[in-house]
Length: 355
Image 1: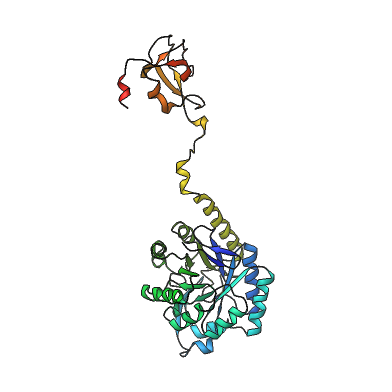
Image 2 (image 1 turned 90 degrees about the horizontal axis):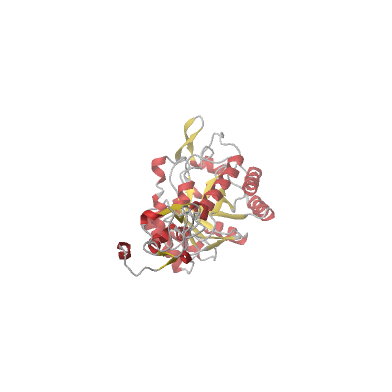
């Protein structure tokens, strides 16, 4: 699999899981956005992501409604109005990006127009993410992929649209592609998460595959890692009780810290698949061959003359077939460890030689 450099770190199966906290859907202006950046930094995230959206340019129909959940029940809201509340001026964006640099955390963002792409690249954004709704906006993907920065494609796209987006990036010579599996819904229901898509995408593409979590809580991210996700994106909020879209499915500051601890613990526990080829049992847990009775010099050892006891610091129980049939060179006492230098070959073959 290709590794993609995203800010200070690489994203790939051979790398520690890359953790992104999303603040684009839960801020209400510059000051809250900066507080969310600080939460990401304090939690130990690798990057923070926002959404560069100009609602007035984006929405022709300003009456589109969207369903979402809050702690007090399901709601319906106006997409344009909710998006409008998160708009910031160019100067505010510059201040936010400068704040990310000051706190030494990687910043990237979605972009909806070519001008947004230009601005974000000029400001040093580590990547451009293409929103799920723009998965078939091939002109935008073409434009962004020519800018020399990684492109993050949203896997909510229909497969043929996703494949076309990848093709466009590759045609432009941009192989720094990350594909995110992102379930629909605010929040996504368990039946909508379809984590096995991560495995499918990993089998199809040589690019890093990630999981953008829209479900409640943290739990879906844990199997996502095991299935091959090497980058995780989760929305954070200052207060999930906020009666607006995305807050309910987000992590609060204390949860964000625990989330990263959990991910690192799972990573550590996954270890290496090669470990099966190494012994994971100490010698004190294994057994050695001992005499089951007093054995006189010159006697041929039989299976019933042997016992197997811990620790395995002497002749391993695994070598019992090499002992059977040999002649005792000296007297061996009951419960005494048997060693090869206590034995000599017997010219008479025994029934165990067939092994």
